Image 1 (cartoon, rainbow, N blue to C red):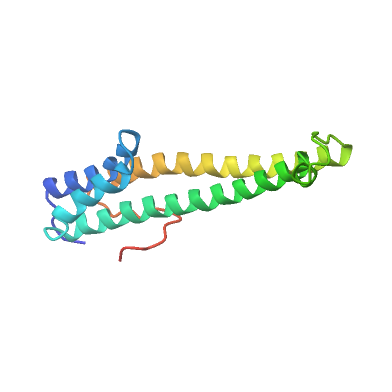
Image 2 (cartoon, rainbow, N blue to C red):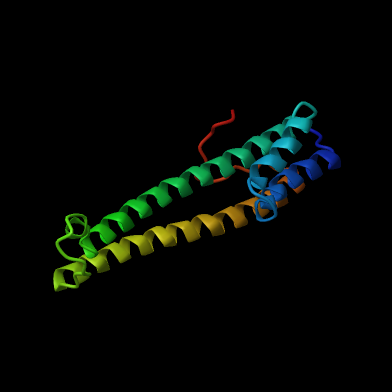
Length: 156
């Protein structure tokens, strides 16, 4: 990076990382606020440019991971509901009953276990988002480069 990073550049870089918490104030705040801060200051400093790219790439990556996990969870829940509620018979108007045979309960347990694993991964992503954003802010305030883990580089 640059040999002399000013205090203002460190503050802007830290603010970019912290501004990802704006998602708790308004929708897509984790993209809008860092993007505005980054685009308005990226030409002034390579340090700010690096930190802005890192923060935005991490937020986009977390969004994609969450969407994929949500899609998988939806598919698992859909198949489980289809099997448990015996939708084939409901659609054919043969019977309207929930089927609680013993083999369905074992399938239900395995589906719940998969959904639990997906929920655990979501929780880990949530904690990782908070911890890494704070670490990024602290490191950039110290004038050090910070690289987020599990980040896909969309913005280079």
